[in-house]
Length: 88
Image (tube, rainbow, N blue to C red; front, side, top):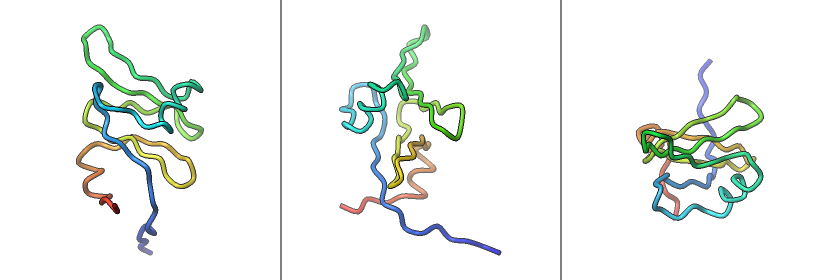
């Protein structure tokens, strides 16, 4: 059988170190579920943990999304552009 995703509204932002981070992601940082890191090679990235996996790592330009159930994931720019479109 084949299946098609139902339309789901998400919250998202594209990760850049100098770009404003939304309140819902700041809350994840404050609760220890996410962090922004600059490592010794000056490569900035965001890392997150959730209940289903050990964690996600996203790099500059990747998208951080939260679905209507509160599940937060990181998508590459290419994957995000294939799957999602702006609604407003």
